Length: 144
Image (tube, rainbow, N blue to C red):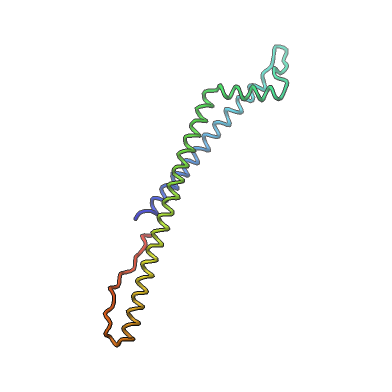
């Protein structure tokens, strides 16, 4: 039973993925800023902004980002890492539930063993030693 170690490994992997997502999102933000500065700073021959309307600037930024290959690659990579992270999160939840079930099973077995001991003591005292006790199982120890 190495569920605690598996849980720890998955948590560390999820933390690494979170860090990777942070770096990717930072890169995406850098591309967005670069494109925004290029579009907003675009001037005609007379030095006047090419796009004077805010809606036109927003549309130009969106179009430029949609056409930017680097931006598209970073967005795909973020999506891939997020999907992988969700899979690891689901695996983590499954392991946590398995561990809880294992702990409950151990507690139930220990409780049943304690009841058998109590029954054996009770019957030994009430029948003056003519009772043959149940086999007593050793307590289960958790691996941590």
